[in-house]
Length: 263
Image 1 (cartoon, helix red, strand yellow):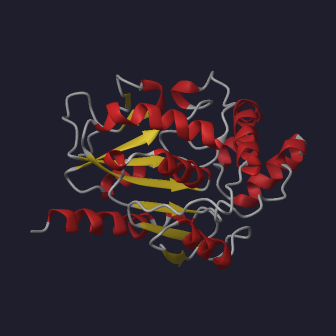
Image 2 (image 1 turned 30 degrees about the vertical axis):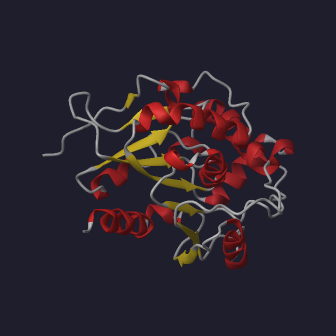
Image 3 (image 1 turned 45 degrees about the horizontal axis):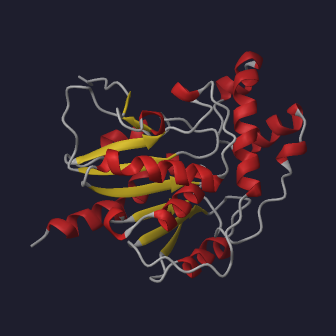
């Protein structure tokens, strides 16, 4: 029998984090912090709960404009979102060890977050996926100037928006403004090329081999962003290859965690 767990906000910094455990379950010894992609809410990584080791608790970032924060417009840039998460992070972690994952827009937010963390708040390991190196030119989709029909067609091509949304005009009316703002934030984001490489935890970079917008070279360029160049791996699939390859994405995090506990 499957036990349903209710998502609950963290009492301190509640608007930025969502737990995936029942109120009576004690906190995990290790936190897996997951940051959603554009349009993603606190539920997009729920299927990963079955893949967590017993001591790991998953927490998902709640971005403005969706879920419990639906009525808050997401006017924050990638950098501003990272800064807000950084401010709320110490209360969430409370000295616990943690791991970091972000996909697409979430990878960009995670990268900016890493630049803000002091030595005593670093994660054990990081996995980023579905994003070109942050200093590369943004995409040329020009989402800000697309009309409704053109933007919906783009979403169909990207294959990441549920069909029940794309086929329902009322849901589209609710969903499209938030998603379009997310896309605009991504297109406006660009990290400086000469930025100091990150010297923190080990990192792994993943991408889909059929992603039309991100090449292997785009992924390999991430190696310039870290003192220890991350391993780069392609998985079979498009931009949302993460649905089929969750275990592959999480494996480096679990391996790092296991190494931490070995004598």
